[in-house]
Length: 363
Figure (cartoon, rainbow, N blue to C red):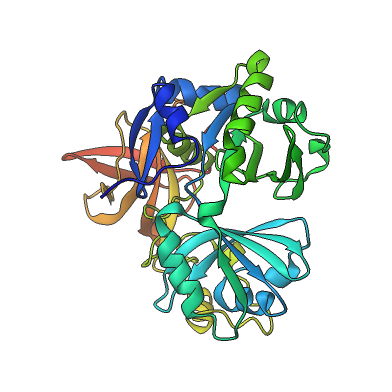
């Protein structure tokens, strides 16, 4: 099957990026090294091509009602100009996808979904749209760059008259960037290092890319691949759908009770089951952990107790480029989920000690 491309694919290849399939797209995994790119974002500014993400518009008088019926968070409380992290619960206690919703106008919202789930999510949205809300899959008509790091604001500010300092975290505006009109400038990101995400029409991709790299030259701006995106989100403690969240993980098990709102009149998918789960408690919980013994925790490795009994499994793991120790996430029996609890990871037959810890894993 031929891989999909983004408006920046030719640029990545020309820059010598190591390319690989991700969610059906030909994406850059790294340009120089994951560690170097990771540290660039932590201390300076880096640019990620995230044009593979999906975008759905919800418009008209029934847009809010549809969103309230399919998402876990309370969209009714979302002000215009703000974004909201949420998820799509399924009928069996799991998660269809984790998403971000932007509120543009009284009857206009944008849902951003994970690249691997675009078709799945679109089918879910349309099959649950029994009230005739106006929905549009705009995924192929939107490009997106994430400019992340402590110097991101400084760089983008050179290209826009919009005062970026006035945009709060998870806020956004629509403005002109590098002479391109109607750019969504969003104070969001997936790195924990600060910055903005820009959404624009694909035909302006090269204009915006070139302007950013010219403006960011004094700040040492660099393109960043998906490898560093993964290590950055792990240090920040952000979940990745397909690893830490999936169709079998409940939002309450995943520590997402804060985006699961049982508001009056909000009868979202499987609400009764999740309310029952909240009242009775969950048998397993998603934890963040830091290695005490030397070793690299990997996805699917077992968590064990002191006696070697299996108590859960790792869903994401790596060596932190910042702390130089193993870190990760995974599900354990609830009794082992408290902060500072010592647990073990079975690494190819070796029982290595770890501790339940709280991110960010960064100095």
